Length: 217
Image (cartoon, rainbow, N blue to C red; front, top):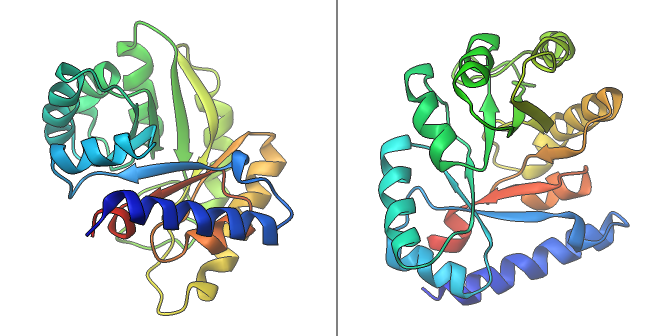
């Protein structure tokens, strides 16, 4: 496995998907999802030009971020997994942006514990899957309105995790609905699309794609 080669291929596919949609690849941030990757592999990814990394678990993230920081490597870190409120303080210390704001209580906890402004994304469960976190489509606008009143939080956009599908085309409607919601709320970012469906997500407006397996195997 050649991580640098994988990253180059992902960037090529991002550029092709962006061009197909009449967009610039510069509008899209590649987030390397490092939850299954060891520190040496993450170092390779950073050496290959990756500037954004995503982690799902606080404990794993703490260790990796510390080791990489000790080596002088400090990419932008994205929290992309479910965040428990009792881990909020640590998340605020180690992450630059939190994608997974899935409840008003979590937002309130982060707001109360933050000592600086933190960028966040509101997680929306477009497909209303019972196994996934996030606000429903009907709840999302009200949640954004409430959370926007809280100090220390800056809502940058929306995030979703699409259902698993054999054909990536099947999840296009999920991405399209999130884009419509984002546009209606006047927000900037759409964090959507992973290894199996990021091209469809880009065609539907993604500004951040979260790719792990296609980079690290």
